[in-house]
Structure formats: C-alpha cells, structure tokens
Length: 286
Image (cartoon, rainbow, N blue to C red):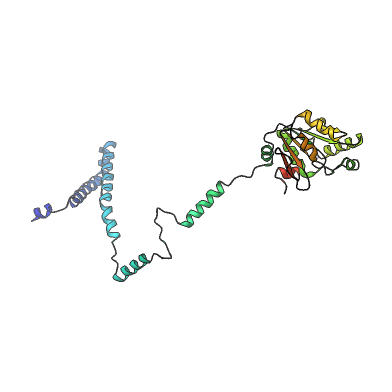
C-alpha cells in the first residue's frame, strides 16, 4: 500500500520530498561544518560548495512554493446572485460615475498633469531685444537714420535751436543696432550752434559710450535734399525717416525703409515698413 500511494504522488510532491531530504542533509552538514575541528579540516573550496548548495536549495524551494501560496492567499470570491445582477445592470447601463483605470494606463488627471509639465518645458522662450533687432533688420549691415522725431523728441530744426532732448526709450534699441549694424545718424540743422547742441545731447545720453557709434557718423546738412543725398551715397540696407516724401523717393534705391509717424502711417511702398516709433517697430514699446 505504501508503494502504491507513493506511485500515485504527483511530480511536484516528489520534488518537494526530495528537497526536504536534501535540506535535512545540508542542515546536518552545516552543523558539522560550524564545529571547530571540522572547520579546521575543510578548505575554502569545500565550504563554498556547501554554501552554494544551500542557496540553490532555498531558491528552488521558494520557486516551487510561491505559486501555491499565491493561489491560497488570493482565492476567487464567488459573486452572490444579487451582486451578479447589480454588476450586469451596471454594465448594461454603461453610466457608472467612477471609472476604474488599469494599472498600465494613466487617468485623465495624470495625463493632464503630465501634459502641463511638457507644455511648460517646451514653452517658447521670449526673444531678447538683440534677437528682435537682428530679426527685424534681416541681418542688415548698414543702417541710416534721421534724428528728429526718431531719436530726438523735437520734430523740427527750429525746435532744435531752443533745446535738444534725446528719447530715453530709444537708447537701448540704438545700442543693439550698433552691435549688429554700421549705424549713421543724420539731420538738417539751421546753424553750427545747433549742430554742437545735438552732439552734446547725444554724448550726455551715452550714445557714444558703447563704441559702436562715434561722432563722425553723425552727419548734418542744411536741406532735406542733402539728407537724401547722404543716404544715396552710403547705400544702406535700411533707412529710417519721418518724411514720407524722402521715403517714397528712396524706395527705388534702398532695400528696406522704416517710415516713423506719430499718427498711424500708411504703407508707402512694398519695401517701406511703417511704425509709430522706432521702439515699437522692434517690439519693446506698446
């Protein structure tokens, strides 16, 4: 009867019995190993072999035992008839308020939070004034600009005879222009005294301290035709002016122009841009 019962045992039970016997043998050997006399007689290779055998037995036992324990720890719960009907009704209606999310999928709230992080990370960086100037000028290497109404608060040569006021809001733009372009300033004046006043006002405002603009690049003339002649001779990539007639005349010869007018100006030509101020054209004023 004993033989028949052992023959009817499953392969898993046979492996378990074999491991138990092997574990008992290893335990006996380990007890002998830790005796003082035996430790002295064994070399390091024998000790390592026994230790490795013990570790192998332990891991094999855990691998065989784990599935069975998981099945015992997580028994399937049979649903009662009432629960079955409720679950079927909920599935048929398809209008449950709470939606269960599988572990491998994220909830809409988590997706929204992750998207916010991505949007903040890839949020476009606001360009600097220097980048805006280079972009607007299309890498133009030479720029000519009149003073009245653009760099100076005054709008006529007669006003310059009384006072010369440099716009503080335009200084930073001028500095960035001189970093990437060869800048020339020009204006019509009525006398030499006014010319000296203009140079003094520009110097006091710090226009010449950056090193990109020197006094020799500030040109003066006595007529509007003279300013047009200056621009034609210099052949700039850009010219900035407040006189629409000069902008129209130079449209055939100059690649780009900016017409500045306090009132909202109209486009004079396809290559003539318009703005209420130099600062506004470069995006640093509202």
